[in-house]
Length: 78
Image (cartoon, rainbow, N blue to C red; front, side, top):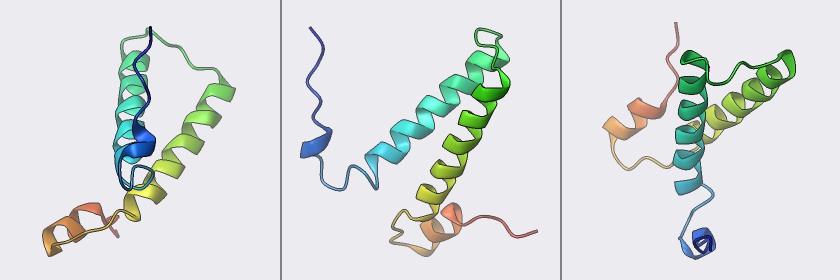
């Protein structure tokens, strides 16, 4: 049996918890690539690019309560 999905009961899941879950999934994917457990095709890289772009947009949209949090989620301007 699979555990029940309770994300719909978590307040602001789509703009909070889901972002962190997606980040962790991407990090796991990059670790698999580094360890050569997963060798991406050109199409896989296109999907990964779309996932990273989406994640960056959602990270920048995370609410920030303190100046420190605000600075930590803002993209660096070089």
